[in-house]
Image (cartoon, rainbow, N blue to C red; front, side, top):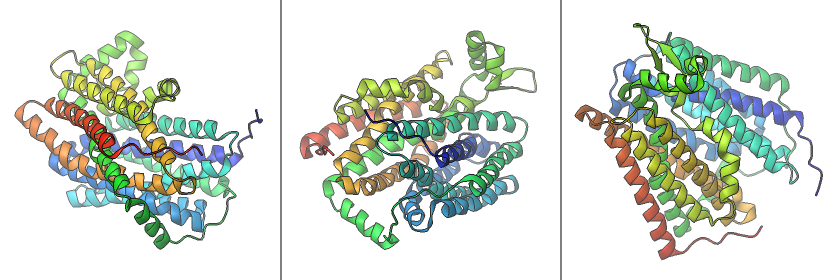
Length: 429
């Protein structure tokens, strides 16, 4: 077995930047629904902003990677920060719906520019001896930032929303300094492809009707409900569950000190869990991802994917049931969703990579961003608005049952597709 190549310093610099960016991104996004309601906006208005935000965040990387390959990762990183920083600071100033929508659009643009650059750096500085460990470290750093961002932002917004936004802005400022002082452009082969070339290549991939239909199914039946979970959970916990009971549940198991990290004391002196601090899967993924991956690595990819969707459906149903049952069931629901995500998300993205010719793996993964963007674009306008409708009826849990049914329909859609059109053939190398 070949000795593992040591990681260069830029690998660690890039991963440090990733932690900070995910800290800022998720610190803002996970509590954003609570913030919009604090300002008095409707769930329909929130859904519009969420849809725009996710669509831009996941479609821009399709083209931003091309600019990074041509002009250098470091330059494009700095451009993303220069878009990020003033946009976050504008959240402190603007309160109008149009102002908030445009500001979040700018943040999404910055995030979209940034998104492929650190993974691209990791890919450029790893080889066959250390790539698995390298991308494992990168994925862990994503989840570290995504877990701590909402916790810190939640604690700060309990004092003032401005403090939460300032924390995100400071993280971006630190990223800028680290990049200027320590980020060294990784060595790689020069790329001459233009943006026009990129679009033509994508058209070639999407002209495969079977592949295009498959991506559409993924967008509608996986990524749409997947993003609805992240759009809704924080505000659902904060507004529809007894957060005092949730705090007490954590305190009884882990102690007062641990529970207080995720909570705040209200004006009456009651400790309440902050919805955004637990309304994601990052902290569970950090613990269980390797074990889950090993369990499913030998199973057929689409069977594994459908098993993941089943776990997601069960998780959504449990989250909904927490409204009329012990509120602490929401933790079990989140756990099931996290297991479903750990099974389905990496496996389907790996599958898309391996059905592509080796020289077109990046291109096929680029088109996968379109499926993610499609799901994101529909998630807010469909499910956040639906949540508002059900909540006004007095039955907010119905949105989670609807999501569970949506996932079951996804399983059926994938099964019908593979039986009628056949599975894609995975290449050997």
